[in-house]
Length: 493
Ligand code: UDP
Image (cartoon, rainbow, N blue to C red; front, top):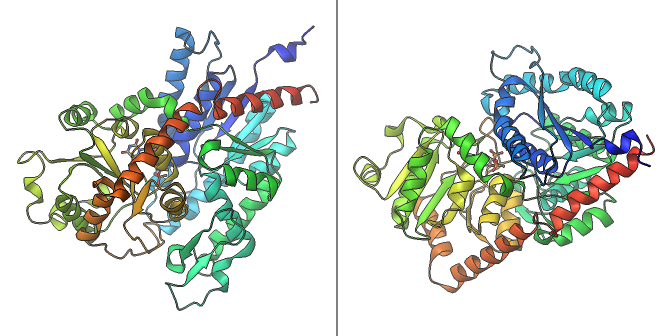
């Protein structure tokens, strides 16, 4: 006979890092577990709760309608105050930080979230915690409550291995200081990964960040395992290496955004008034004729870079939909001659989208033929799932690793030749000429052998991506495998 414990659904607490690129996939992932009958709670602060709420509401509506296979386990958000660390009211998200001092205060707040986390754990005793890797304290905190910690970092396994190699071997340290073009190899990676020194984080320049990465890596070691927004067929060698060489356990449950197209639309509708207009405009364009340009939520470009991008789009001869963040204004500084003729009210070859685009819907629109991207992992995987080839333009974080993965391993993109690693707050990026950008777009979209091969591979990969979360697919099975393990573990608590 089943005990009361066995009859209760599993309960997982999700603790996302407070930036959009981590909140969005965590919310999608939680919704995915909820659809399988897991009780999911997301612990976050008021401003960030607004980011995850559309996914939560959608999951609950699905459950009520019976789309979740008759399973009615509501998802919820545990909203806790953002700690007072001297940031202005409402500044609770990494995307809103404008100085190194803000970043320092923000990380102080991240540490202080341990208090409400401990309270939640003591009161609710969940079966597991899916914690963002940035909450390094959660390794000890979860252990103190006797609860397994599963780490999520929002990267691929490929990039996770690159990070680990950097922390363990510091190959940049062995490189001459004065040669930004020196080629650095990542030893022991299952793929040949080589980057220029200028494309990599420099431990000497960022000692505090470096120390933090080491703490993160150590916290991984003290965790039960890792969950990834990825799928086995995308990176089988990396999954095997992660298991065999690092001795880590992984569950690949993505692409999580595939389950959330409607949510993307709803979330976007709240942030941008012109979602329908954008999609209706795409409806008027021939298949594969539009370049979609977006650099995620954390990257901004200098006026000089933006100007060359505008020229590149013009020179490409393609239609374009270009998401421009507020930071890239004012326009007259970057608008090249003739560009105003291409966009409304004067022209119709392109659109600039201010604020938020319904990215998942845009990428899945047949009019979109290529994505110019900064290679944030969410954007990369969304493009892979939609079968849209990429023009890669990384800036920092794991983005240069993702570029290598996309261009050299998966063969579904072409780089613009970005050379400089640095966040908006850290560094200056060399300007890439419009001709080079247009050239990269043409290599992907052109009739030549290269473009055809890239597009064929992108279509093949998309079919695998779509199959993974379906019943019987590898990600579907990994979700089930993890649930079974956590349920079996409950017996021993
Ligand atoms: N996104 C979106 N509309 C926008 C900008 C971004 O829907 O106008 C979403 C995008 O689909 C992705 C996430 O925001 O899911 C950005 O994450 P990513 O890892 O690509 O980049 P980051 O913002 O973390 O650099």
